[in-house]
Length: 114
Length: 113
Image 1 (tube, rainbow over the protein chains, first blue to last red):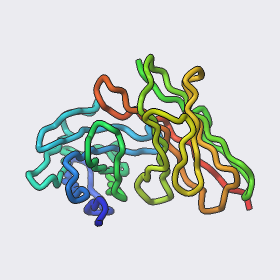
Image 2 (cartoon, rainbow over the protein chains, first blue to last red):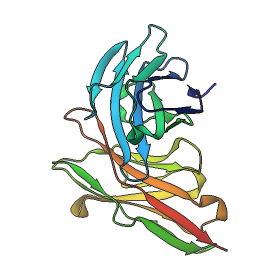
Image 3 (cartoon, rainbow over the protein chains, first blue to last red):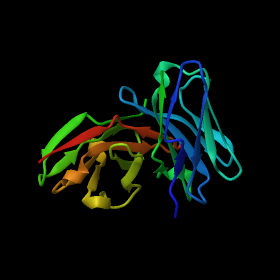
Image 4 (spheres, rainbow over the protein chains, first blue to last red):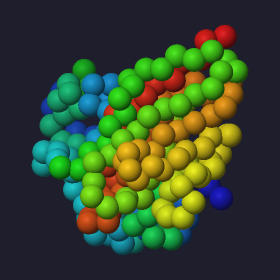
């Protein structure tokens, strides 16, 4: 069974640009969550999508957005990039029930903003 | 506010020694409890979980954790660590109020040869 796939794995952008990250969950999983991980702030929850609807949202500015498609694949977008957006962005999918908290993570997309 | 505390940012143990990583949470009821591990350059992997029942739970890679309601703790243990256990370990809880995961700050485990 294929795991959670995130693309791209690494990317470099400059301030002011925008970026789109993609996440393909485990087949059959309907929930996708996104996290930002930095050395200073640790793991921070961005948002969670379930059946194409945003179900939970973390405390991030509106520059961070996401969506989920009918096949459960998800994308997140960051507009007007800032240096502080440099981070590892992790996607996680959840299976039988999203409410158990058992998540399956991808390897992440490492974003560097110059 | 609900929170998860991992008091140790770094822990160094010798290979073959025992390990205990601490996790405390603040919440009135019993949450769902998890330990995840993140190896360098990787995503997180679930080590073990506690939902209910036996308070000592076994996980993958020889890890176990014990839920102690009176102490609001869910400490992770391993009797003998291996160099491959060097990683960052995260404790997390799910609160039934909104089903959102609350994460600890993580403990980085360093193994001395």
